[in-house]
Amino acid sequence: MGPMWALLPLLLLLQLWCGVGTLSPTAEGSTGPLSPTAEIGLGPVIYPGSVGTTSEATSGPGPPSAEGGTSAEPKPSATPGVQGDISTPEVCLPTCICNLHPGSCDLNCCCDPDCNLGCDLGDTRAAFSFCIPGSTRAESQVCVKKSLIFRNNTPLHTEIITDPNGYESLFCMHLFDSKLNYFQKPQIVKKTDFSEFLAHYGGPSFIPASQDQPSSFAFYRAGDPIQTYFAASSVLSTLRQPMGMGASGLCFDGNPARFLVSKSTSCTRSFTNLSSSCTTDPALDAASYYRDFTILKVPVNRTDVQLMQVKISPVTQPGAPQMDGNTCYNVVDEVIYEIEFNGTYGIQNISVQLKVSSVSGNSLQQQFTLHFWSKTALYTLPRSGNPGYIIGAPLLSLNNSARQHVTILQSQGDGLCSQTLRYKIQFGMNVKTSCQFSISQKMEDANCSYLQKKLYQALEGVSSPQALAIIGSAQPNQTDQWISIFRRNCSMQAGNCASCCMVPVSLKIQILWAEVGLQSNPQNQVLGVRYWYQCQSLKSSSMTMVPLTTVVAFTDVTEWPEPPRSQPSTYWKLPFDFFFPFKVALSRGISCRGDMSGAFLMTLSLCSILSF
Image 1 (cartoon, one colour):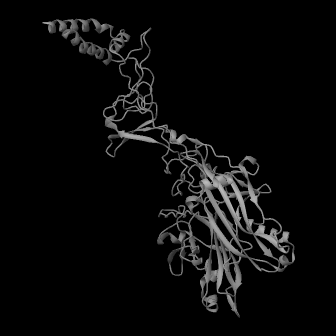
Image 2 (cartoon, helix red, strand yellow):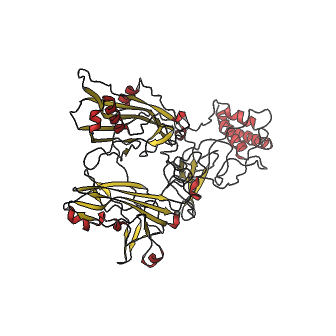
Image 3 (tube, helix red, strand yellow):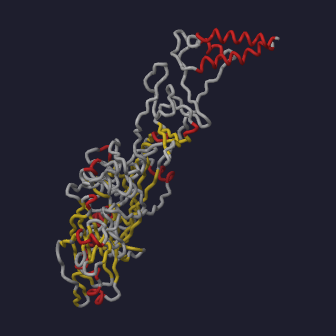
């Protein structure tokens, strides 16, 4: 038995001897082609694919070579831009979620095809400070040390990364991650199960807004403060856009106006001595918003400032504030800057529209607006997402086949409900407003239905929404992109009081939404909306003020799926029985035919030596 057991390692040596050479085509009548494997030094196993190539190759198999294997022709890397990188355009994306303004370039939207035409940026996206998440391709890759890879035979795209010294350091493989391609279907919300969804997924929260810090650059980038120059004193400063601070909303004059950030702010300016502030406070004088300073086209130093100045053109020139009795006239209450820009060439023109009024109290409500525009851009109501809603974007509604923003009550400085200004509901932002609604003598003399109509208009707005947009890019002619609003209104009369009228005093807007689509780039969609009114019995001629309250609550009802399975493990093809080496040797009989006689003679010689 000793010599017989000694034959086993010799036969295995024969098997290896026949398999070390180059691979040959499978012989006719054999068991079939061999499965490809991944040979690795000491690292993890790569996903098996087609016949292997050498480690210098960065792609799949090449054409057959003369010896029978495959040739390893390196191919140029076609790796798309990394998430957040603004150096590579992403105009080939099938859906650009941040393309909200048709025909014009959207700020920091790296996949917007209009950015090379509408904004005339010169160098592609040079004025962008970053790429909005979702405007570049989402990729998943795994990297190991290059020294651990013996042979690469994966069909996936691979890349060799070199260090600063030029040595190959990392071997990276781009994976087809199933987690990035999971599609989530939205749930169906009906009127009967609205309360069940609300109770199951309830718990709204308030999300604070984040602020981006601008960076210094050779030209204005999005969010950079706009510089001003005072020629009389040769002082560089920044254009200011006052905003409200604290619970009282008092004006903070240190807030800078930022490039390409079109927005409106409002604040309350209080006076301890109106007669003195009327003529000395520059915030009340219209001339202080355009006179004695200029705007710089691009941020420059003092040596170039003379060539980069842009004068502010006032649409009208109101007179200086004047005090007459207890009233101060020609006081600025609204400032609107219209700024024309041209990409990296900066600000081209700027005009200011000033509105004045009179004030006799101890406070004044002021509003400041910045609007950036270019000659090629046409104004349309911007999308609130493409396709899904963006957190913080205005909520869209439909009224008489026209898109509009959903608004709620807004209080004035004195606590009364504003007749002109209304607060725009932002997607995902919970908010509560309250104010005092003044009942005029005409309303007191009217019937109950007229009073109810006026209070409904105060809560919902004059243009009451008929439907709500499911996605941020909903079109009025696409009925499947709009969802009906569930309403519960008040009854006409109170129970036991014949002279009483049931009027709405509170409106709670409940919105159910979910994240839908690819898990790597989910889209926010509205699934259901309910207008829930709370009513109160109002006795005729008993009240001149009615307190009104509006609450907006967003509830996330996303059902996240179970995590997909991880990448499949490598299948190691091991011998399934004792005779496996013999079968493999016989299947390669053609390739080993020239060496079989020598191997057999050497085996017999060794057996004879061991037998003695």
